[in-house]
Structures are given as C-alpha cells and as structure tokens.
Length: 322
Image (cartoon, rainbow, N blue to C red; front, side):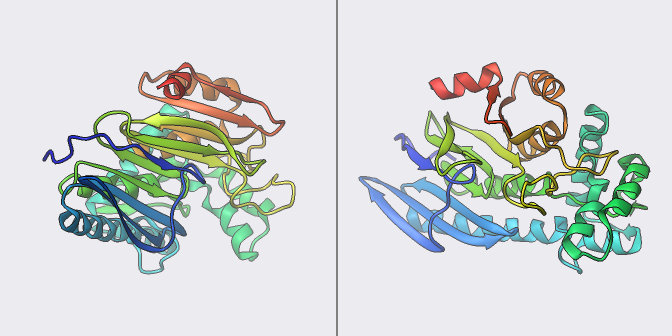
C-alpha cells in the first residue's frame, strides 16, 4: 500500500524519543494529517504517530496496532501472573506455548550463542531479589552464576526452564515491531516509541530521533532515520542504590551490574534487534562491545561512559550527517 507521496519531517525526543500527552491528537499539514496516540503500556508511555491522507483509516490502523502490542505484551511480560512467561517461571514448564513466545526464545538462543552468553534471559533471580526484597542479592547472584540459558529447553509443544527468565532485554522491541507490522497495512509512514525503543518506517529521511543524555537534561546526540529501530540500554532508569552500581541490567555469570557505560544506543533494521544488541553490548567490556556491533554492517551504536566520555561506531556518524 502506498498512500504518502510527500515527505514529512517529524521530531521525537526524550528517552530515546519522546512521547506526547496521553490521548489522541490530529495535526493537519496541508493535504497530510499527523495522527498521534499515546497510551500506558509495558511500564512506559507508548506513542504511535502516523502521517496519512486518510485520517479515519489511519485511526483504525493505530487502534489495531495498540491491540496487537497489548496482546503480545501479555505473552512476553513476567509481571502478569496469567502470562506465559510468568507461568513458565512459576512451574518451570509451560505446555503448548504460543508461537510468538517460541519464536522470540529461539531468537534469544541465537543471540546467546552469538554473544558467548553475554545476552542471557536467566538473570531474573538477581532482579527479583532487588525488586521484592525477599532474597539477598548475594544468594541470587550465586544462582545466576550457576545457571545459563543452555539449560532452557525451547520446543513448540513445551518450554522448560529450571531458572526463572526475563525477556525485559528484548521483548519491548519485539512488541514495537509487531505494532509497526500492523501499521504497515493501514498507513505509509509511521513511528512507534516505547520508552527507549523506537521503530520508524516511511520513505525518505523523515524521522529525527534524539538520544537522551543520562547525566543531563538535554540530548547527547540526534540522528535521522528513514526506517529501522533504535534502542537504548542504560543504568539511569531503574537502579537500586544512589550511585547506580546495582541496576536492572545484570551480567550473566557474575550476577552483578556492569558499570563501565551509562548507556548504549543501537540502531538496527528493527526494534527487537536494536533492543537485544543494546542489552548485550551494555554488559560487555567496551572493546568487545564495539567489535560486536561493528561485526554487522546493518548496526550502529553510541556508547556513553560513566566518566562522561563517548564513542561511536562509524555508522553512527553517517546517521548524524544525513
């Protein structure tokens, strides 16, 4: 479907990109209308913005996108006792899992292998210890050190995991991508923003995305994106002590939070890939993380360090110059 033949330049900032007020807005610019809606999902504000010549059709598309994202959120979240991941964690097994969960876990397995275990969903015991206060982080770290994703069995008929898992490092991107896949049937260009995860689509250099400065009030960088995903992993949103030594990103094997960087932002062909790779790169040491990202031609990254430094891959500079 092709309905938009005029370029629209829209700006998104805050987090990786910002969200507007809750509700729906319509902004008419000549023959083109911008439709924007924001809702609370996945523990953050999720904003869907589209540009269209047919506002009524676009509004239906936005509604369908939110419905699909809500459906997948219930599949991937660990916070809903009735959700699939929560039931797997409670029982250690899950019969007849959804195809979406099986597919995501298989992609997690590939990234786990590709990163030599740096990306590992079995780090949940440490997060649970901080979140609930029912367990000592030291004991939880021991369990994480003894476990790995190798012990998780992923099959279309049954899942097995002796250790509770979290998909926090990849699920938001997967949900955002599902929203975009739905939108493509209704509109020609759009942007989905979910906290630190972004997915854009549309012709030309249409979207401007700002990367938040974790230690300031402004932006650390701004890039232009015609399509693709952007995600940031960092220590500055969810942390458990004043100096952010312990936060929601955990290094597999040690159960401790990495402290070299304060944020890693990755641009990739889709939001799920950006989400997962930013998580993996954040827990790696800097040299390994840079080589990891640069090993794929379709990835770019910006690293902001705790001491105020920054570095980026060559592809990042190209995105700034567009």
